[in-house]
Image 1 (tube, rainbow, N blue to C red):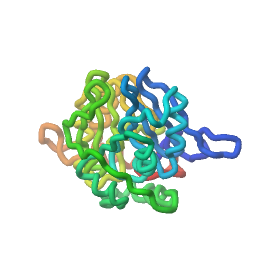
Image 2: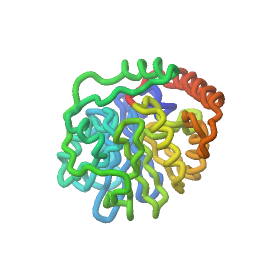
Image 3: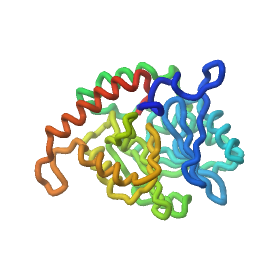
Length: 292
């Protein structure tokens, strides 16, 4: 999915004189870089032993990632691992090319790994009424052709240590896809949310859209909101670099669930109104889109 400047018309993205997209490389922290692609985002984390890449963009993004790595004073061969948050094309499209750069460990959740290895579309989303026109618009802008399926070197599950970032752990967040995974660095209070949450162009954070299981996605958002994150990096939309937990907690209040935290009925009218407004804003703000 695409959003705001970070999710909107590719023409609004940085480009060269011929209109070709160029990746913006933005420092969020001394060890963290944000790669803003024409569709979606990826992130680079720096450790003394090399780099970790979170997601790999659409097919054809490998040269953009390599250029971003050189911009920060490294070489593609310095990449040590690639963590894929889920199987969608705008997150795994260039994974095979990136994996060929050298000693790169490719990591994905065990529930999504079979779809990634097969280059398969995986289960279809269970769309709310307001999502359908947005989803149709998104799908119409997907690039033609097939991606090259990457290998997966390591299958992970909730709670696994990922070997970077002073103790990064996998956080299982099923719902967007069966094996969606977020990454949390508790010592750094940095969260990579994948598409379990989305930062809209109007500045609000919402539950990720186009989910295979909406109730499960809402539960996963509440799980992320329970973390003490200061910085949160999204698959779509600008990162939050301060008080991210507060924004996630606010989003969790509107997560589409039939019951509240204590088992009482949630305020469904407020939730439906929030979803309806979100749909209107997405249709308005995102005339061109990528896959969520």
